Image (cartoon, rainbow over all chains, first blue to last red):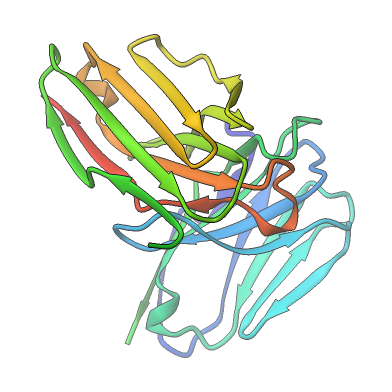
Length: 113
Length: 114
């Protein structure tokens, strides 16, 4: 059982459509981070959410941290082929040091032109 | 050069070989990490170094031996590996508390053990 469950595992959509990916846990996280990884590269940080109920927007990307700090979602509006990649959520598990991250299994997103 | 660099990008080795992976960061960070990314598992933290001291060994087999001579360089020495060790090995760096800036990853070394 993964500590951070991401769903769906794979998502294929047409350019212009919207999508939402989810990151869920039975445990409370002090913070959660979202990364995007493109083929042949390492993950790149998109956002960090810290406060329960927090919503952050990054252009067409909207990130939400659940009120209980056990779940998070990433919504992309009008997806573009450049949004293609592996989306990973990560956080320090159960009081672990802030830099000891547990990663979810990822959601692979394919945006077709 | 900027960011986090890793060499080599690809490595094929036999089970009896000894090889080393190298990571270098030019971001002024004091924490460095090794991760393993394989096809069927989430990204797994292997080792954490804070200010050149190892602060985390996530139950990694002894055939993987890390070395951190200074805050900018990190090595992973490999010997007598198994085929199931084939994976993408990622290095990352950050400020020690991680905080909102997150971790900065290198492009990884794709390792194949024959």
